[in-house]
Length: 198
Length: 198
Image 1 (spheres, helix red, strand yellow):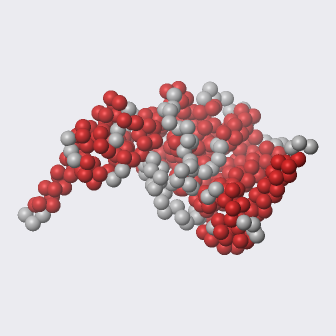
Image 2 (spheres, each protein chain N blue to C red):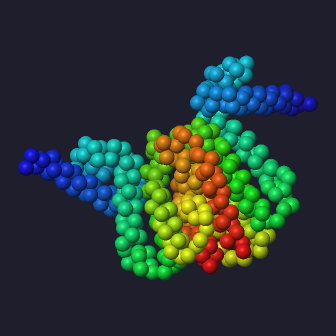
Image 3 (spheres, each protein chain N blue to C red):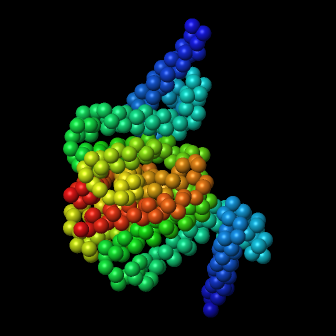
């Protein structure tokens, strides 16, 4: 087993990372995002500061890792979870449900995304290409025949992701969006999809 | 004339600012965005470095000021310029033309927006609220009756502004978007509007 040692180290690293992420989640749930610091996280997780530093690099890195993990979970729900978010339902219904779920996800993660902002990095919030592909596929399944379907898919992706981006780049974006906003954007999305596919 | 002196000073400041902006535009047209520096601009404009510093604060500030000035000009065209971008044409036609003009404007200003990025400031590119109001008004004029018209207007604004935002936040966003992208997003926008208003 020539790779035994590195592999064991890697497994250890994965375990530490998972432990740190779930500890960070607990801290956020109990005290909010503002209270999570590198030192505080190390102490609560009973790990050295060096470990936290090696895993995440910066405080923003903690939130970026949380966002990535949640994003991956969201994508799994879309690609393989129960319908109508997952496969198996009518494509128009899936589009409507996808948009509402995505808006809720983005708004729920507003505080974490804000904390993940890092001056030396692009704005967090993901690879929109999956969203784009998903929307494009469902529109085609719904029988929407437009030559510029790719352009429409990009714009509908931006319609979902954009409001949060527009929101995050405002300096006063510390306060979370109102729950009505989520509802209201969801209704807008549904109207857009229903008109587009009818 | 108790306010004579301050007013004269202000007129001077406005003149310097206009002169600096038009000099910066010349430099960009001749040599590209990368070559415009605080020192180079002062020298070419035959003004002191202190003046450039006072007007713009940072190099990014020069590009932010250019962007603001061009944004204002664009808005004037929309609100009072000749139809179909300006008032007087059919609302659906105005929506289509507005979207295509806005996409072209955003993409044309990609390099300047990129240079205006400042780690301590929100992402440049403007107040989307005018765009939103304009789209909402034209949809209503076109007879689109949806209870969630405000949500739809926010999402259509994001559909226009979002692709550039998504683009700017990528680290490799140094290269300008291809001309086909502008065409392609314009076609997507037109399809979206035509389906929404039919």
